Image (cartoon, rainbow, N blue to C red; front, top):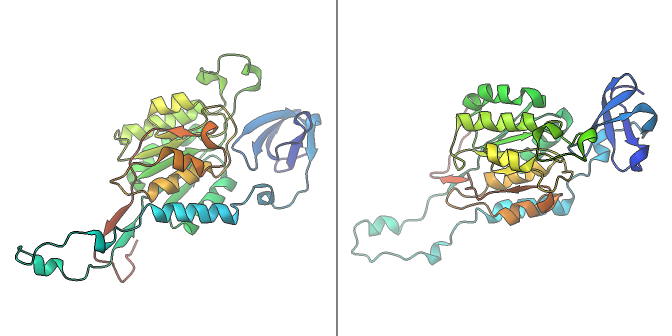
Amino acid sequence: MKQGDLVTRKSYGGDIVFKIQEIRRQQAVLRGVELRLLADAPLPDLEFVPQLDPFQYMSPPHPWWMETMKRSLTSATVPVPTGSETQPPSYWPGAAESAKPRPAYFDMPGKVLHLDGDPAYLRKCMGLYGELRVPAEGYYVPEASMADALYRLLPQSQPDIVVITGHDGILKQRQSLDITQLSSYKNSHNFVNAVRAARAYEKNRDALTVIAGACQSHFEALLQAGANFASSPARVLIHALDPLCIAAKVAYTPIRDTVDIIDVIGLTHSGIEGLGGIESRGSYRRGVPKIPYAVPK
């Protein structure tokens, strides 16, 4: 067996497909292909799976999921019908102007800065941001380096939403110990440090929405550090695309509205056991007039 091979663990009944990230003597460091899980296992416990495109093992967004996402994003930005607005009397100042046809709006969804500890997940997420028309910048950053990267990237990118994710998990030898301690997790302390770096840049949770965590992450510590949404309340595994679901919904919720927490978590694969959060405002804006040409970047 070698780095990059796709494997399952015999002792767990082959329930999860992993990629071998590293081999240390007779131990393999494993990253989930579909789930944001970091694990390790002895080499004799591993079993090969067909070495095809790893994304065949990642449940793709089913057509119903994509349609649900698109409907959800669109419904949050439906304009108020002009017929429901009260027309001012003709003798009011400016009445003639108010009777003119309304100019066309242009959309300005919130911008996402996505830091991911897994390059394959990052590529998949960036493609889906494009399909959902969410403006996003993505960077592959190892979890231990995320806090330092944010000090540099946040002033440069100036996002409305930050996603801080990758791989995590409860350390195997500590599962019977106190899971309230950050030392019981593989990367939760790195995510906490990254959230603190984001809050050092912007303290207002409505000005910068922070989404943080991965499989089994320390939910309470991430919220306390300043995250708006985090994993994992029940310390369960979360899907690779779950943080993206929340980011896209926040990006298309109008700034005058708070994000419906139950609605947005219902869009994820892992549900309320995998993700939670606090009331947060959206970051979608409208503007006029509609610009007929492309703005240079």
